Length: 234
Image 1 (cartoon, rainbow, N blue to C red):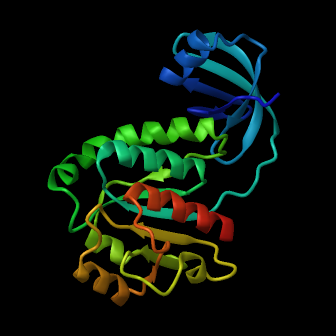
Image 2 (cartoon, rainbow, N blue to C red):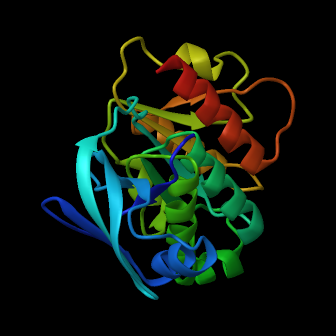
């Protein structure tokens, strides 16, 4: 039987603990018992953990051997901020697909009220990332960056930088990912698409442009499709 995985809030040597809502869920909803075993992510590895103490807001573990893990993909996604229900869905699925970092982006066509409210949503997005990481049995929690203005995105440095563009008709995403790439940054426009000025600025900054095909995808669908393709290549 597959053991449930928890991401530790505290780690010290061979001891770990989860606290707050996590602990309340394990103690009161799942009714954990002393001696029960779970997989515990410490941030650097996953180890087997045996429950040693249970309180309403704190569950403590004794850690033993490490659990073998598959390699995580090194993909960062820069998602132009969408309507928040769709944004949350995209974030959740990106976590399940193994992305390392998620950057919310304020693009030229991002709706003004969404851009204004985005900073207040970051903590909610981080809770979604935490929960999704545990559900999908990840060994670490991907980073949710603070919302970034589009001009700051242009200059980000990484091995391979690709924008998904509806005006690209020649290069498919799979063709733009070089063999042996270690790190990948994918950028997705808002529901109104990138502006011509933004596309020019991406090109000037050394970004590649890629397509997901002839069909018109909703923004959140494009994110998931692209991450799945990129993960399969890497």
